[in-house]
Image 1 (tube, one colour):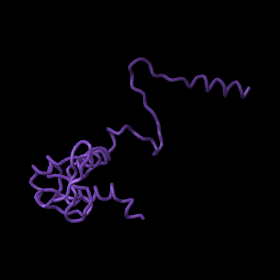
Image 2: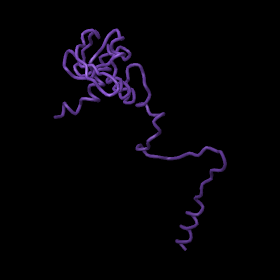
Image 3: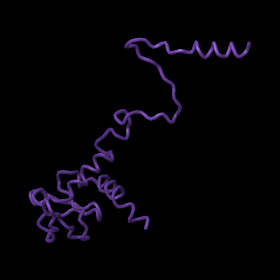
Image 4: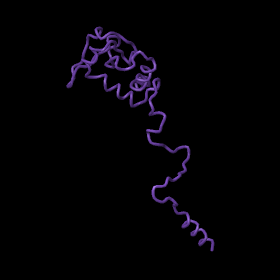
Length: 136
């Protein structure tokens, strides 16, 4: 008899969602929502998300024209800014030339198209791309 009651309870637990109605769902604290609704992916002026950092990193190579026309440049390795005229070393690549920092010798130069005067931006870029160096 108990088996029959248990079986009938399971059978009666069908979804009541019909057509285009919205359904409620339950989840624990580990439920992950799509990236659009996560705070991490929403960019605020002082919060540089990973997507923005990746976008900025793509601009630190094969960028000679961009660098030479910029008002100011900055290196996110040594976190220093300088004029484009101070750059005297370039690496030739397949699709352009990449600047080498005159202060530290690393190819992590960005133009003033990015917020290079913001200390938080350089800190986030440095931590995101050079944290492996700190651990070694």
